[in-house]
Length: 189
Image 1: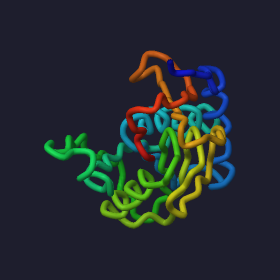
Image 2: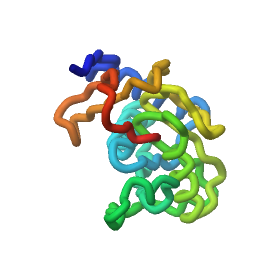
Image 3: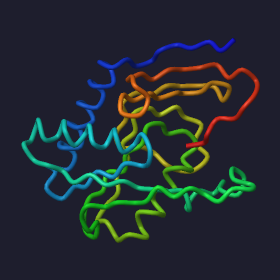
């Protein structure tokens, strides 16, 4: 049996994203030169929500892009032994050259997903800077990557799984901590 504990419910996720939106505005002294880019899949929805919060606060629409990191993953050959990777496409609404790009993802774990995201972004241009916003930082980094904005820090063991559910794809907003049942493997992000 898998033990599950809810870490963030709908309201806690909303408050965390509102705080991150304020921090992005504060750190960048506004958002005139910013672009939010979500890592597929859940990062896109979080980026959209951040853009909506920023618009409520600043009355400015921040462009939101979608980043597909499939071909940039360093574990691609391990995950898809006999299958071709499924590409979902990258869509950047503006030229990112000279912009401040805020890369958005749901969970930061080993840092490998973010490394792939950085590589993918650089292939599309040369931003002035790249910042990282994550809903949950669970630790266990394998690469020297640190988020600029964090919704919640959750110290975990490697036997635990952070499951992020978002209304747009999962039908409900919740971040849950699950004890691994001894089989299966967690995606490394």
